[in-house]
Amino acid sequence: MTNNPLKKHFRQPKIYIKLPSMGRWWPEGSLLMNDNGEFPVMSMTGKDEMMVKNADALMNGAATTGMIESCLPNIKDAWSVPRTDLDTVLIAIRIATYGPEMAVESKCPHCKHINDGAIDLRWVMENIKQPDLDAKFVCDELVLHLRPVDYRAISKLDQDTYEEQRVIMQLAQDNITTSQRQIILESAVKTLAQKLGLRLAESIAKITTEDGDVVTDKILIADFISNTDKTTFDKIRNIINEYSSQYSIPKMNIKCEGCGETYESNLEFDPANFFAPGS
Image (cartoon, rainbow, N blue to C red; front, side, top):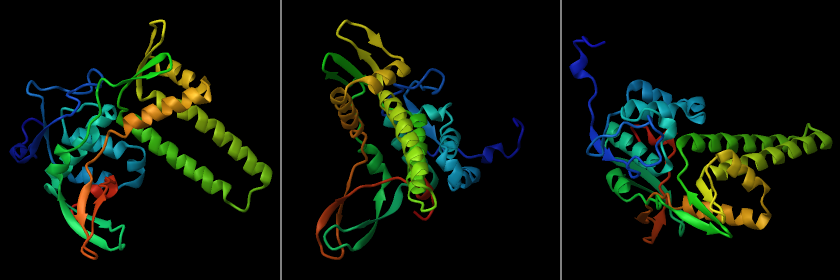
């Protein structure tokens, strides 16, 4: 409604951020770029907050994508958010909604004491480590050009992991026969092998062969990964894992209130808890 007299009371941007990718890896039409490279971030609405507390909506990614598009209007397709930008986007929404300070707790590895404290999320956002956006690695006679996966792939991985855990729980049941257990296991192994190739292919932008051919089709890349020998497969997986490990949130240095020792603690974001006023 353009003539709503309450429009001046609608939410306004609270902060502005720059995306680490600077728009790289975003498909055409998924991101509205500004001339200055800054993106407005608004606080969550009541509806957004309700959605991120819905387990089913969190599992299928709908809550997260809906919240991102609601709070960052320049993002037109949140499924396309590359991993390089995801933490920055989520932290910015948290800051815009609840402020920069967030309560944290961690267990001391020396004495097991639970330490309570707070962290300034602005510091976290400024110190997020990012990978080389033009990363490429040589694997035998092939050159792998890597790319960050997008949120669609991340959400799919979460769902696949859940399904794998469900299968494991099913195998542990006492009321199924040995033959039923074998059928379930064989099906799960076959499905896992197919999905693993597709998962790794998501992190490869293209492969250049020794003959100069450039392959960009993810299906063809996944087919190659699934049909290469174990040695090459392990090399590719290790290269991708090493690259993916570069997407990292800075660790916190904490002095234990129990024993006085200092230790490092990982800061992990669980959307169900991260977007809560008391956290």
